[in-house]
Length: 222
View 1 (cartoon, rainbow, N blue to C red):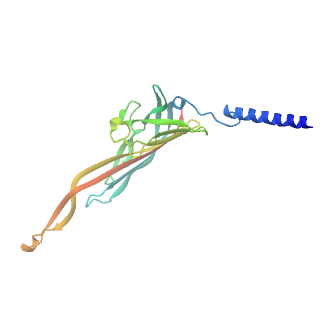
View 2: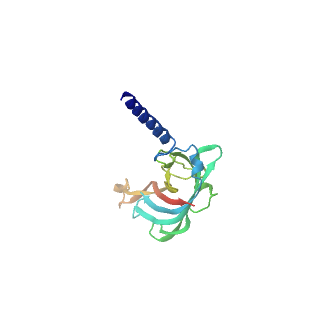
C-alpha cells in the first residue's frame, strides 16, 4: 500500500512539474514577454483621429472667453519604425488630414490642418519607449513634454498608447500659447480731480491666448 501511495505522489509531483514548465513556455494560456517589442509592432496603422481644439483667452473686452474650434474625427495613420540597435523604442510618425472644417476664435468658419503631413514631417515625429506586459499588451509611452517642433511633437503631457491584437490606441495633446500686450482695464485718471472733467485711461499689461489640440487615435495594423 505504501508503495502505491508513494507512486501516486511521485506521479502528481511529475505532473505539477510538467505543468509549470509548460506555463513558462507560454502554453496553457500563458504569455511569453517579447524581447523585441519594437520589432513586433513596426508597420502602418490606419484608422481615425478624434480631434478637439479648445481656445481660451484672458484679454479684456474679448467675448467669449473660450470656444471649441474643432470637434470631429478624421481619417489618419500612425507609422511605427524601429530605431537601429534599440529593441525597446519606436520612432512614430502621425498622419492626419488637411482642410478640416472648424471655426476661428470669433466663431467664423475656417479650416484646420489636423496633423497634416507625411511620414517625413519632422514636427510630427516622436520617439516612444515600448514594452510588453504578461497579458500580451504592448505599451507605448514618452512622458517628456516637448516644446520645440524640431524635437518632436509639441505635446503638453507626453504620448501614451497601447497595442492589442494589432489595434493601436494613441493619445497626446499639443498646445499653442500666444502672449501679447493688451488693454487689461480702464481707470480714472488720478489727476481728474484737478481737471474740469474726469478722464479714463487705459492700463496695459500682458494677455494670453491658448489653443489646445487634443488627439486620440484608434487604428489597425495594415
